[in-house]
Image (tube, rainbow, N blue to C red):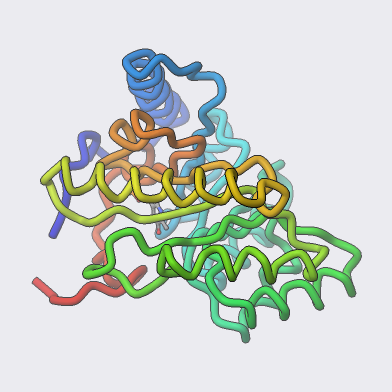
Length: 256
Ligand SMILES: *Cc1c(COP(=O)(O)O)cnc(C)c1O
């Protein structure tokens, strides 16, 4: 299932990227205004997965100061090859424990924390390197469509176990909404993440730091902002349509 992505023309110059970024920012501002929010408080995380390094350079020159990558291998390569640029790298995809050491070495942020085993490996490595890492706890808000992320009911216990990993700085929660063009179902996912956050805030606010919500992608970031997103992760609307299938990045129950 593919959702509509408005900008599919492939940007090829710094100006093209600047235009796409400006257009996404304008939409963010409009959504913020609609919901009585301050657009300056909403963070745009451009997602550069599958984008070749020469084009990533153009996007950085057009103003991207941080980039999200789903896969550790690709993120690590880009971090190394683009080391001359000032970019903050965010890993936003599911992580296996054997890749956690890599993430600890170069990432500024990890948005898909859903296992204590991964938390432990990350923490141990970060302590050894004298680094810390911003993390978001990934929650599965679309039960039937994706197996990554914690079930909402498991979040309180998970949060309670995190303080022992002192190199991890919890920033809040991350989710992927259902992949459907049916906006009310998408909205429900975002609302559920907000409910999870509000519950955590009411019961033990110290466990979630600022308690931010990372939700919304090219096809649904405006809805996410209306539902309280503090960070939107936008790839295709900035970099152009991807040709790779989504199920390379997260599991889907049926292939189409
Ligand atoms: C690819 C990806 C995004 C961005 O998706 P687009 O459709 O390119 O905007 C957001 N979040 C995660 C976890 C991703 O893997």
